[in-house]
Image 1 (tube, rainbow, N blue to C red):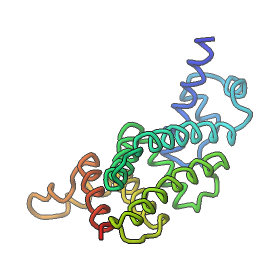
Image 2: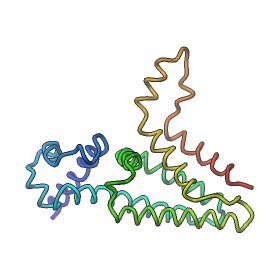
Image 3: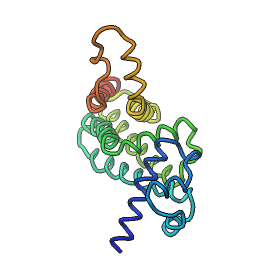
Image 4: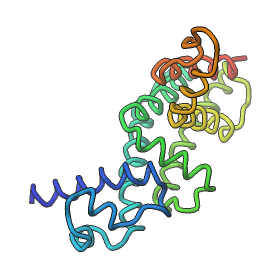
Amino acid sequence: MTQTRSRKEHILDVAAHLFSERGYPKTALEEIADECGITKPAIYYHFRDKQSLYEAVLCQRFNLISEKILQETQKEDPVEAIRAYVETFGRYLLEDSDFGAIFARELADGAQSLPENCIKNLSIILGRLDEILREGKDRGIFREENPFMIQLMIVSTLTNYQTTAALRKTVLERLDGAKEHINPDLEDIIPNLSEKIQKALTC
């Protein structure tokens, strides 16, 4: 049982990395099997097809991030709740860089391959954000803002910053003088974005 679970988790980890690098359409099960050091039928033992493997990879991560956000944002103060919302999402990207890359690809492709279960988790996350914003507005702390817009500000900013590291490095190399101050690490961007969103929301 332990060995079976270990192999399944290994397949999920390898698949996540390849999906993040190449995207769903360009990743073949044969490549995943080769990277895992197993045969293609060994993948079929755990997953019906590529779509079910992709769904397992994504749902595992969307389940986790929604649980983390719901747990970490249970704050009395809406300002603290919105800070926790942004920073929880950001910390998860630091923990699982494959998630950010896959999510960014899905956003760019119009979420054409995003499984229904993951969309449900996105709805839960957005619903929690809406609750925080409405609580802040009812208390006279936040001005009224569209939760979709705030969500996109958070997700797009952090996933794009994470997935453009190579491009940013190349651009910096073309600049004269020391410009590292304009290219901080993602872990420094997270609290900075949180502060900017709080200021934008605050009346």
